[in-house]
Image 1 (tube, rainbow, N blue to C red):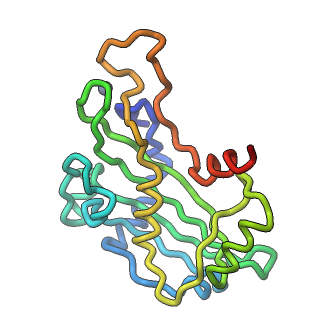
Image 2 (tube, protein in one colour):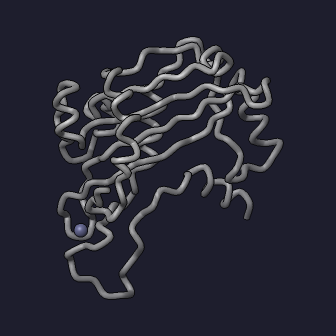
Amino acid sequence: MAVDQTGAVRPWEEDRPWRAACLANWGMPKLIDLRRFASESQRVDGAFAIRRLVRLIEGLPEQPLVREVSAAVAQEPGVVWFSLLGQMQLGRKPQVVLKVQAQIRLTCQRCMQPLTYTVDESVLFDVVRQESALKDANDAEPLDLDTPEELVADTRFDIGQLIEDQLILAVPYVPKHSNCSAAVSPAEEEPVATRVSPFGSLAALKGR
Ligand SMILES: [Zn+2]
């Protein structure tokens, strides 16, 4: 296993077969009928260049340029790997699981040197019929960490947008090396930003 500059372990070996399946489907994902995708338990694996995500990379250091599948294998940073899996919970509640991995070039805010940030997460979503149902549900029952996030059903649902949103949420607000070369006093020492669901922290705030 490789350890990147953030100290995170990159589970490359165990994900190798999965990534091979993703590479077989290179390019931005097609639009899907989200509810149907879930109810038919469909699945899509894919990979594409991180530079296609213009909202994500805006304001970030230059990301590696990956043009094609063969280059992606050799030059792993710069690639977004994903799976979207549809399922019916208890045979009636449509859900999707998004698994996404990417390495994103950031700048350490302590030493101002490059930092490669690894995102590796799986997120469960309920597919809901409409926006109001989503809001009502949020008002009716307090959010907790185990409550799936929600996506509004769309017959032209953009997986690429969903992935981009997840990566934007995953990027730490103040990225820092976990073992930064810049000298700091112990009082200043903070743990490296770890991925905490922003919805979870929102729930924590609401619970106060
Ligand atoms: Zn640093």
